[in-house]
Structure formats: structure tokens, C-alpha cells
Length: 501
Image 1 (cartoon, one colour):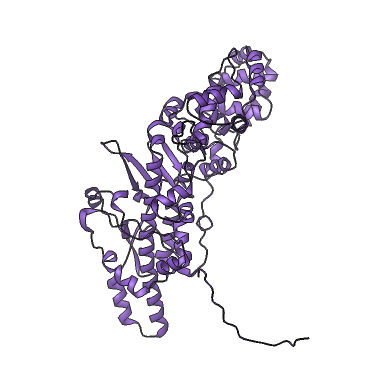
Image 2 (cartoon, one colour):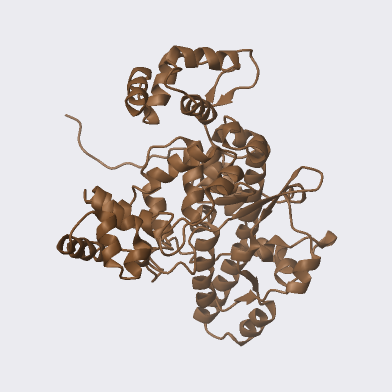
């Protein structure tokens, strides 16, 4: 039996070293603008060499917004290989500090464009590798919108319906009511009123009960229905709230068909309901969902993609103060602290510049791919995945995934999360461009919504209609999509329609 012993052995291998700077860069890329704004506040308090640059409104009005075509220079946070990662992150700190001096001193770039080393510098942070949790560092209560978006995330919906739902939630007021015009909202999204109302019906099933109602009457009716108390007498009472406000009990008894004792019980039950279901949540003065990117149409019909600088604080490094305290430093501990602060501030400015350019580049490609959606509505969503965008912008898929998660884009059709634009595809029957799966679901739903009792379409008939429109789809796929949208079979729909007639 061989004896046990110690020996030294050298092995060569390749791996990605997650330096604190690399970890910080990844975290900065994942934060949205609102989280980034909170993040920079913590760094401003911690690092004496950083200071907030006050906005100059007059200068901002003169400066042209930085758009996708103007932001080609600069490295992206795309760490495809260990070599590229270490090159991008572990560069000599002193050299990086020297490269950033002009930007941090407030030099204006050529062409009058906004210097994203400052304008895009919406965040900072601890560079010690510790996790930063924006939610945990916030003392405010969860808002109604956050609560509704959390429930929406758990709901199985087609991407087109999810876009509609997200937009409707953002239109809700603090009382929990949806007071926007349904027709106007549907027109903006490029869908029909019935499709918008169908999504609104799903949202009205969310908690708290009564939320997303369009009126007080509907809010109370939703709560009574949840309690299984919306009988004809209570429905009549809810329909005659103006009489209740006038204390016209005689007219109420006649309208509800009840006596005085029953009416008194019904009114007492009505008073136990919640007329403003949204008031149980935190104030929405500082909304958690704000656009990170905005899209506007140019006069020539193209799209301008811009970062939303309104939600981003501007920070810079005070070089004069840094030099002053460096000269006054005596102990090694003081010198080390000043050096670390300078390095962290330098890295922060450069990484935020990279973050801004990366987000803008990815968002611009998504807008280019989904141009038809912006022009015509959700039915025209194109099939899109992370790899397509990553290949187009020259980044890694993981980078695109981080950029699109928890980032919102404000478009003429509403506010949407960037990841909603990634959809699966259905082949074209004529070999042309593929169709978005969500767009196909939208077509199927539109066909079924237009049915009459005499003309109910089977799944085979839907396949034929889609094939005539150039969509190559199998019958089982139609059935799967139909079931995912909670639409009954053609036999069940025919029975329902005949029963309703």
C-alpha cells in the first residue's frame, strides 16, 4: 500500500476572476434608473471626492439629446470571455483616472452633445463587493402599482396582453381606480375596445378587491361579487347611489323592492366595503416604474431613442478638493483612504458612461426590430430573442439580458418593460419573414371575438384562415394558444352563444 504524503503540483487553467469592480459593473447594469438614483445617494454620502452636479436647465435646452447614432464610441459592458472581462475591468486604475480627468472636470464634448460621463452618471456604490439592495434601503411602503405589477408577473398572459395590462396598471390612480378613457387607450395601443376591456376584466380580479374599477359603482359591485352578495336587490342599491347620498330611503325601497329593515341591513353592508381600495398602500409620489429610455418620432418618420436623464442625478469628481486633501494627508491610513476614494470615483464615472451607452445601444436595436409595433400596435410584434439583439450590437446575450431586465421604455404607445419585446416566432407559409407568436395569438383572439352564433370557427378553420394570411401554423399550436388564453373550444363557444341568445 502506497504511503500518504504531500506534494506540490502546478496546473494551468482559465477562469474569470470576479473582481469587486467587475461585480460592481454588473450590478450597475442591472439597476434601473430609479434604483440607480438611490444608489448614487449612498455613494455621495460615503465618498467625499464625489459631488452632485446641479442641473443647468438653460444649458440642457441648448444641448441636443444624445441618440443612438451619436453614441457609437465607448466600450460596452460585454464580458464575452475572461480575457475581455479582465481587460475591461482590471485596467490600471491610475490610467483610468487620467483618462477621466477632462470629463470629471466638466469639459464639454465637441458637437454640443451631453457628456454621458456626467449626465448619465446616475449611480454610485460601495466598491467592496457587498450586495446593494435598493428595496431594502428604502423606507417607503410598497405602492399600489408595485403591488399590481407583482401580481401581473405571476399571471400567464400573452406578451401582447401583458403589454396592455402593464399600461393599464400605470394609468391607475392612487385610489385604485382606472379613470382613463378606454377607447382612447385602446387606440393608442392599436387594439380594439373589447380586447382592452378583456384585459381590464383580468386586472379587476387582482387584490385588493375592487381595484381597477372605472367608477364607485363598479368598485362596490366587484367587492359584493367577491363576497357572493351581488343579488338583484344589492345591485339595485349600488345602481342608485345618488339616492343613497340624498337619504331618499323611500325611493331606495321602491328601487330595490325591499322593506325598511332589509334596506337598513343592505346599507350597513355597503358601508363595510372599501370605496378607495388603493389607499391601503404607500404614497406613489416617487413612482418605482419610470422610463429608463424614451422613444419619440422624428419629423422624417424615424425614431429617436434617448436616455431619460430626468431620473438620473449627475455626479462628478472634485479634483481641486482631491488635490487639496492629498497635500494635507499625513498618515498612511489617510493617504490610503484618499487613494481609494479617488479610484472609486474614477471607476464610477467610467462604468456609468459604459452603462449608459450599453443601455442606449440595446434599446435602439429593439426599437429598430419592433418598428412595426410602434407604428401599428401589438398585433405587429416581430419575433425577437436575446441572441438576435446580441449579435446585432456585438454584445454577449447575458449582457443584453441584464440590460432588458427591470428597464422600461416610454413609447408613443405606452410604457413597457424592454423584455416584453422578446417573443417567439411562427414560420411564414411563403418563406418570408416569420411572425411573432404573440401577434399570432392576437390574430386568433381577434377571429374568435368576431364570431357569431351562426359562424363559430373550429381550430381547423382558424388554421386555414391563418394559412391564407401567410402564417404556417399547426392545429395543435392553435389549440395550445387558445387554451392559454382561456378560450373554450368551438363546440363550447357555440353552446354558450346559443344559450346567451
